[in-house]
Length: 114
Image 1: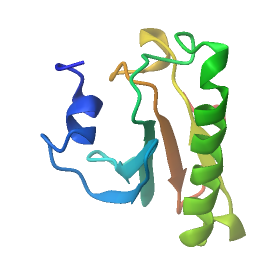
Image 2 (image 1 turned 45 degrees about the vertical axis):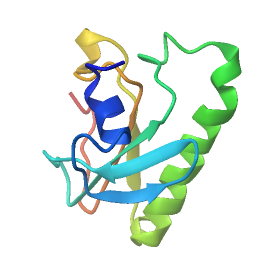
Image 3 (image 1 turned 180 degrees about the vertical axis):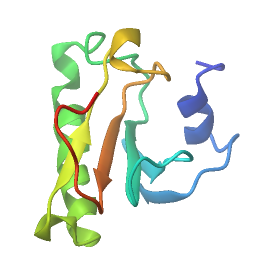
């Protein structure tokens, strides 16, 4: 996906403040943070959204969530709470059509979120 922003970040064509990387995942700080901690977690394999994920993506989706938990713990967010958000489709606010989770924390969150 040559035009996908996140694929270009994975390919190191666009710089990002990476906080974690392994063979399947990449996590980096959001350039427009909505909280003191705002990290995006993405799979290196491109698929557009949760709706575009088939059952074969189960492992990587689970790994993304557990890595969000680990990063929250590393930043002490587990003591007060954090939010993990997955937007699917334009009406949800998804702007980049490469599946990604938002890890948000460091401030009190309100409900409903939007």
